[in-house]
Image (cartoon, rainbow, N blue to C red; front, side):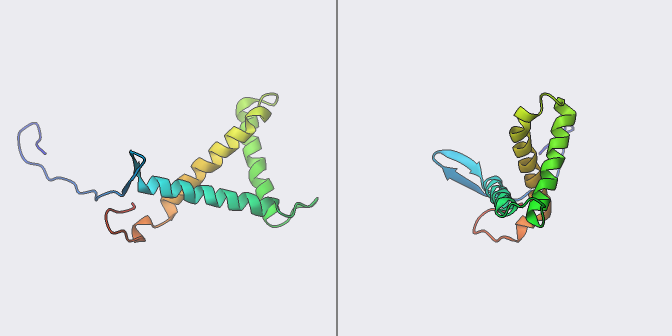
Length: 121
């Protein structure tokens, strides 16, 4: 890489990323893995929170109701009392998915997974 004064600058090495060719589309491997990882966690969370529904919640049901109350509060504050209910499934899904993907990228040590070619980082 050359600067405006035509001197050679050091090139930054960022590593080789892991890509898959799926049906003619080039897909970033880590993105696809994180999407399915987060989807799986959300599905497990939903199943655990709704398997033994009781009048007085406890355990996973209590946690799931707390998360739903939080999302309902966000939707009600942003969209208004009369308009938020029809958007709640979309807003809740989007919020939980983005939240899960952000935390999966920040917490999971993807570089520890050894690949024959490329890296997850």
